[in-house]
Length: 310
Image (cartoon, rainbow, N blue to C red):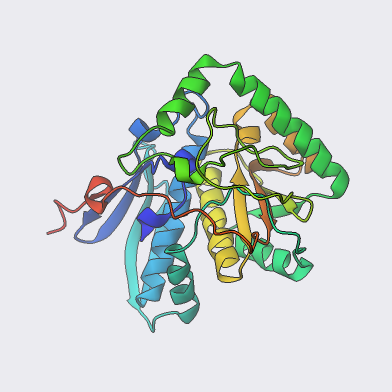
């Protein structure tokens, strides 16, 4: 179930090792975005999402999970060790979240016109807060500042040959990795805040909607190291699964995080209270059009090593 987690460009940069007494989660640097994520921030956020998926799946099966994050300084890519705790009654809330893992997907289409209630946003913020991360909801003026930052990030990355080559590589695969054409809009959507330009049209039909009803928020936390990025991924997973259960469409926007100058602009939007990890677009999906299919995943044997389990 951890393999169902979201990851930047669907890189799935995690590796699980099943040992007799524990699970180990490591960062697979071969699937890290070297051009736009040289520090591994987004890769570790992705691994954090996989860790949260694993925790929820264990709880749904009636197992307490004891997590040790970044337990060995000598092994910096060892992000977490999961130890089995006490057997408990399966958690019904976790079971609902596990069901949502099968249908959660990234929908880059414009949203519908129905506004999102403040209560719905509060539920998602609380899910993130339970993982030690905050969701700052942008006011209308800040949304225009975000749009300016997103446009600048797009221009910076469009002029970066390495970034463009990397993007092309991860949008032209057919091996269970990367962003398929079916998840990329056929034409640029009409939005205030531009989403990522993949450099080529996809096959996802786009209606005439706009993002006027969208709510934009910034996931942020107090620190900016590997432990913080891992927690940010756990918060992203918690918020996204909760959104799926509650019929809320969530789209993560990472380009403004990938460019240092625009990430600094996001810090100003949160008054310097912390470090931004991701921008989230929240709303109600257009009910008139079917969304994209769930993106493909690697087979479990590609990311889970069970050779030392006995």
